[in-house]
Amino acid sequence: VGVVAVPDDRLDKLAALYNSAKITPAVIEFVDIAGLVKGASKGEGLGNQFLANIREVDAIVHVVRCFEDSNIVHVDGSIDPIRDIETINLELIFSDIEVLDRRLSKQKRASYNNKDIAKECDLLERLKAFLEEGNLAKNFECQDEDEEAFLKEYNLLTAKPRVREYSKKDNCEVFVICAQIEQEISELDDDEKKMFLEDLGISSSGLDKLIAASYRILGLISYLTAGETETRAWTITKGTKAPQAAGKIHSDFERGFIKAEVVYYQDLLDCLSLIHI
Image (tube, rainbow, N blue to C red):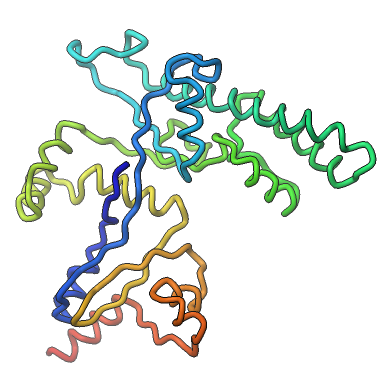
């Protein structure tokens, strides 16, 4: 498990403006799960242990090998990233179908005299047929809010958002990471890292792109507070209202909420620049 800071250039600028003694960035947690092999849904490799671990996460990052190196063995003996992605997706689909089969078997017995349960059984059958065609549950179109609630309850592996995927039809982000460059960057301090990236002609590391994409794909945003004591990024879900956002700082702020005075970051910088002039 790795807890990493979410990159946010605004924090340094605000801390400088307010002479903050401390900077506290937002963080996101990554869980490194061992690779998935063909047949995992039937117990191959780590099998069910892998599937149980991955079922607990909120989003899935596919890390797929695209480079050739005779010194590094590939489990399938050749480099084929599309095959590897399809292997992962198929194993996750197989596991989800098993989940749906168990639920369907249980609910069908109780559906004869219950319209609500019968409605769920109809959803389960349509969803199972959708997966059997090789589709991911995240692309299944629910007919109403009840179906959306059921889909969330099932906690299907293929319903989780993906950061790494080969097809844009799955509404996923794709970017390249060079492990060798990332290793070299990890051994540098902030100033050296900045110079190194400038020499390569890139603005941010692959790791920073991954962190930012993961934060965004989970529907998370940051709002900032600044003062002499601390400049801090607070994590909220996009669309959170002001009282609940205030509650992230302290529950008393939400209970006794009166109003919030909020300024857009860029407007604040522009205003302070005019004052300094």
